[in-house]
Length: 344
Image (spheres, rainbow, N blue to C red):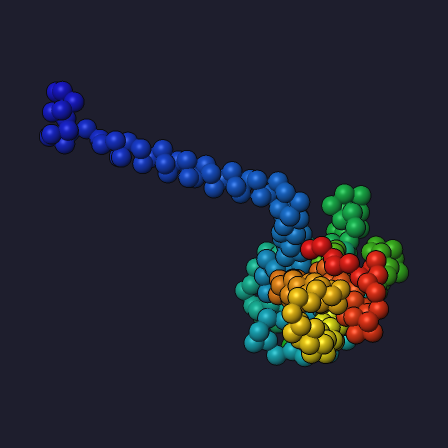
């Protein structure tokens, strides 16, 4: 089949169809290049660092914990919903001991509960118990430092001793908690578990996020303050320049008006001299030159840039020079050197 046959019958992909995949591939590569280029900038690296810090804070703060671990992270006593027990009273009995008591519903998986609270209750002695007829079914996990290595024996002893004597109070959970607290104190006196109070504090990422937030607020406020001061200084400087230009323009307008009045006052005298046939006195010549310079001055005033302070000052000096020439004419004084017209 020839190329013309292929086009006529529609066999084979068209040129546009052959180009489409490459266009899509090129567009995808371009987007990837832009993303990679953005991440390589200081802004992109800062965004990645913030995302990593936020993820660390979410993970270490217990966002992925179950309900038991989330409760145990900040308290020393947990009881399943529906169990009739004064939770606040149980927390007061335990106090600040490195002890966590978890009361589950009958039939709950106690061993799995210990696994759930490993990170949330780290550094404490955990006793998980549930009602089993007239007794308690218990499972202990001593999460004291080195419980899985050098203190393995002490941890095993603590797990066996911590729940002794609580079966007598199967129907009185608060009394059972009191017995557990006494057993814990005995373990501390025997040196089986380390002494000291349990401290509950936010995780390190939360401190870092708080510090970053405070730093950002302080830095932002400082930048706003400094930027506001700079903007205020610039605005004040512009106001001073604008007021100066306004004063200069007002002085120029006043001088121009005064010059116009001087020329008007000289006009009757020029008309009297001009009426004489063949008069070519020095007064008439100087008056005609003055009016010619005044007309050129008006043209320059029409095109004057009010923001050009140098031009305004130069033109004001020129107007004052013309005014002195007009005054010399009025006083019938001879023409002086500085009364020569200024060249535009």
